[in-house]
Amino acid sequence: MLIIGERINSSRKAIAEAISSRNAGFIQKEAKAQVEAEASYLDVNAGSFVGEEAKHLKWLIEVVQEVTDHPLCIDSPDPEVIKSVLPMVKTAPMINSVTLEPRRLEGILPLVVKYRSKVIALCQAEDSMAETTEDKVEMAGRLVEKVTASGVPLDDLYIDPLVYPLATNTESALATLNAIEQIMKQFPSVHTTCGLTNISYGLPNRRLVNRTFLVAAVVRGLDSAIFDPTDKELYGVLKAAVMVMGKDEFCMEYIRPFREGRLE
Image 1: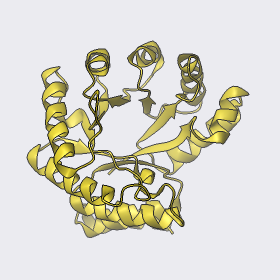
Image 2: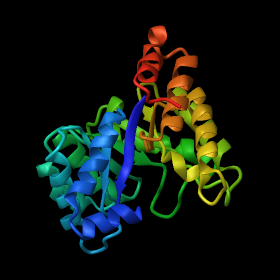
Image 3: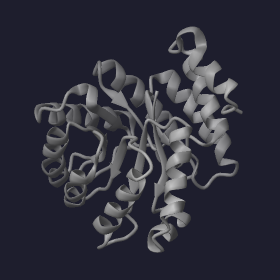
Image 4: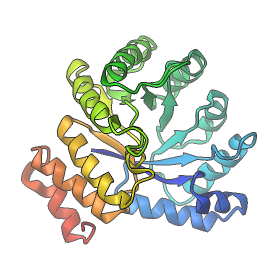
């Protein structure tokens, strides 16, 4: 299960403040904590700084890479921002994200090929975002066609069917779960991912909702997720779910972090 650590995101007040004040120590602490929690990639996002995103994202990348060579997930909707920062990246990255919008397809896919990166592709078009299972699967098919035609191997593609808060759309979780299952069956070798904690926004006891959705998604075939790996309860649920689904030989990916005290 590929884990994309979500903590270094300027939508978090503490991160935005650290970026504004150039508090490198705070950012580096967040990076190291997620590496120790076994994040596969560290998401870096400065999107809250409209008009200055590239400048702040370059600083984030520089600061994080001072303390780790761990792979980064470069998170921006702007192809020009992504293009400006990729030459700084030391280890083959992931790019988050491309959509069916022509500007993003044409601007980002050549970068994915050039830098041999993995890429997250959102089920989103220029004038619509997929809400039903049918829309999600249909857009996923178009994304697979566009991305692979550009020369990106299917194994480097992570489809995000988009999950919306249950508080505003009570059918969102089920639509996404059904879409994950269908996408994984229809396109062998492709991967699926999601911004896991979106599901619980606006609800009480969000962590309980997140854990429940994660288990259901793993059962349907989800093999990547964007979340906080330092959340021991959520991380523990993930390891247990993967094990129960027969994807942890000899149960060692569950036993090892348990022995290290990283499961709750």
